Length: 163
Image (cartoon, rainbow, N blue to C red; front, top):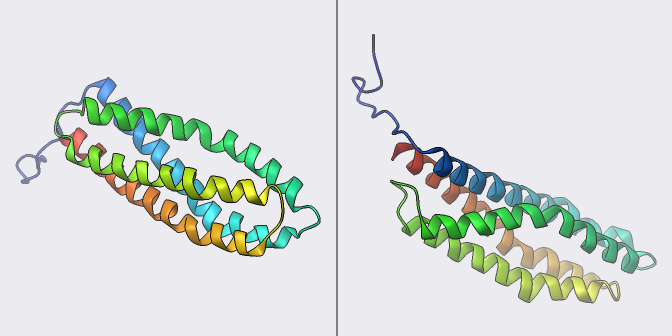
């Protein structure tokens, strides 16, 4: 019978339950945020222009409140697990990938605070096609950033499981 070891493939190490929960929670939360961002980028933000000026302010205010309910939980889990992965990385993970991933998280959060939140603030006062266009274009940084974080979170899981 061929085993992984005699086939030249090292068997995964035993990872503790807490470390496994940490890396999986981080990957799931990060993937959820990336999926949300792709939906927002490709579907949601471009459709803002279709709402029209008559009802847009009401729509935008409701949109902002409801979006917070959707992104809040995964963002909180992602932030907490990102810090834990840097402070106490599981065996085999090291600090380099959690650090780079954390820098990416800081960049997308800074973009959110400095660019997207002010744009949403302006749009909650008045409809402006130029602002909607700027929102769609500027959101690519967050979409790509969160997608890159999914790749890094996957590597973190793989390294943690491999030990």
